[in-house]
Image (tube, rainbow, N blue to C red):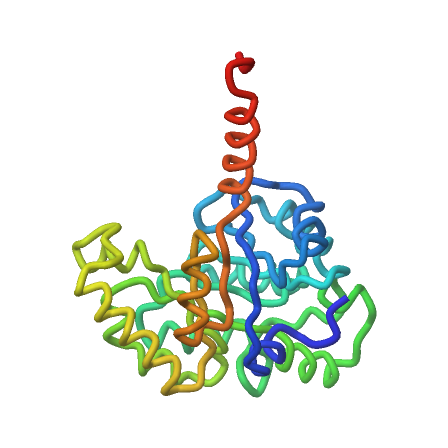
Length: 258
């Protein structure tokens, strides 16, 4: 069980290492990764088709573990944000945040008064189905729930100060491949333009005191990002783990494989 909310955990400034779930659609996924020692699991509903019931069941299963469960939304879908928050997720990761106005809208939807105007549902999975007094519900949810803005375009970098100055944005999560596409250099993460944009992102997070988050695909890059000050790092994903493990075992079998 988690003793503090994800927002509170991010504010401590200690590294939190997790992974992304893309293809597994079973409630057991978050507990499995939690048992392996991952600090959080991101359910990727942006790129993979999760229906609300499946995502909610996975979030609920994650609530009883030591790992935080974050939902990457389908975009600026304000209704989905409320559904997943009421399902009990520890935070939402919203892709393609390009302006300060968008950041304000996300916080407005994700937080209760006085930070926002999230629709109040006092008895659901996020309250463990207890009838929590409204004043306690609002205070605890606002303190615990994390709002993460994914920055993955030139516009997002250009408006970074506007986005990160919004009260309630707890973490900025760098989307490297979409950013490179936005710059016209898809996949060229070592390109000088990409490095310049990345440095602007890092500097902006430090300047505003917002947790720096990023997706990486191996531990070498995770270490590099830790040195740059990243504290919310997602390493690889379930599909890559499955592919790597299955390929390794088949190759190890050598000439006996079919």
